[in-house]
Image (tube, rainbow, N blue to C red; front, side, top):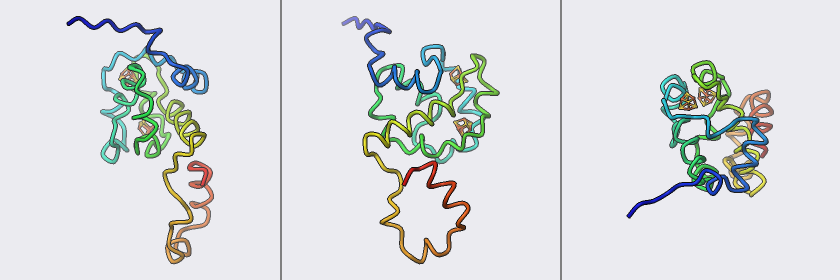
Length: 135
Ligand code: SF4
Ligand code: SF4
C-alpha cells in the first residue's frame, strides 16, 4: 500500500505553534544528524536532537512533549553552529518546554524533592534551574 505524506496535513496546530514560538522552520531540517553528533547532552537524551525534529515533522508532537530530551537540552547552541540549515534546536526545545508546561507536563516536581536534597542544592543553581523548569 502506498502512503502519501502531505506537509500541510502534518503541520498541526501545535507544530505551527512550535514554529511560531521558536522562529524555526522544522521542515527545513533534512536529517543530516550533525546536531546530534555534536550535542554534549545527547548521551542523556531519550530522543536525539534530529529525532526531536523528525518526530515534529511527522506530527508526532506528544512523543516529543513527553520526552526527557527537551529538558536535557542545555541551550549550548552547538547544534546551531553545526547545522548546515542554520536551525537553532535550542529555540525549538525552549518552545517545547513551554508547551509541555502549558499542558501540565512536569519534568521535576519540587514537592517530591527530599528536604535534605533541597538543603544541599546550590541556591543560585536552583533558581536558574527552576526558571528553566518552571517548578
Ligand atoms: S544539523 Fe540541522 S539539518 Fe541536520 S539534522 Fe540537525 S537540525 Fe536537521
Ligand atoms: S543546544 Fe541543546 S540540542 Fe543543541 S547541542 Fe546544545 S544541548 Fe544539544
